[in-house]
Image (cartoon, rainbow, N blue to C red; front, side, top):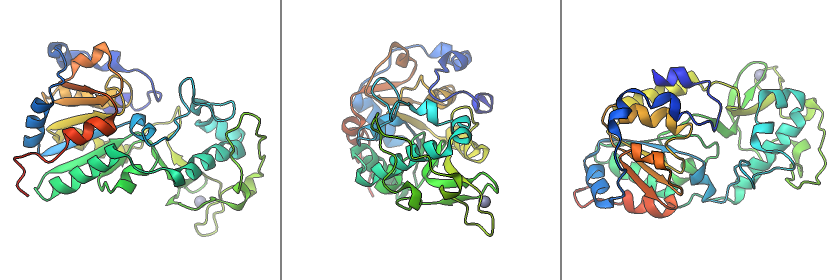
Length: 304
Ligand SMILES: [Zn+2]
């Protein structure tokens, strides 16, 4: 039920202070970086939940538009990824998302994506499961071959009609003629000022409503259908990995404590370490494209 209370929390917000009361107080201990101990736990796990964040995509060279270097023109994600920005200036917001869609054409899954997908396929043959719960909106998990992916923030390659609500997969490049050649991230690029009728429009029946990216924007609540599936995964997993995002920062901070409170091991794979990661069972610092292939490699006990 923790999830239900926290669905409206802003993206990127630290929520650890809200969710660390109760059982976690008793769990204070040093997080271990003992890979062989982790491998032993991994070899016995039947249902593995893998929470992934922006760090996984960053290792494929995908900008996040967050932090000190993350600008598109003069804006960051939190300036444009809002319903207010879209309804004030849909042309500008579509330019931003058009740019993000187009750069994906030159990006490829990295070792972390590929390891997760390979692990899922391998364990499935053994009657075991791997489910990815991700905050990223690109499609690199899918490209890598992952089948079970819960995208809590939606997808760059889906649209949603603001009139009829229809959600459609859309891989077109460009997504509409008017955006051809637009979306430059340069600070001196001028806004395209595309009229709304020339922006992506709904093609369902005679709707013609304005389309928006089907992503969760700042200030919006998460999709309840996706969250229900996430809850089921968290309630049934017997091992949880937090990859490319700190377990104390949203969204993992919503999920990992819920798993840890059941006594289920939580292992963090992240470039950074923080003192508070000691609240979880394992912590493996470094690029997840380096640590994950070791962690999820075939174990000697796997016979298939
Ligand atoms: Zn529509």
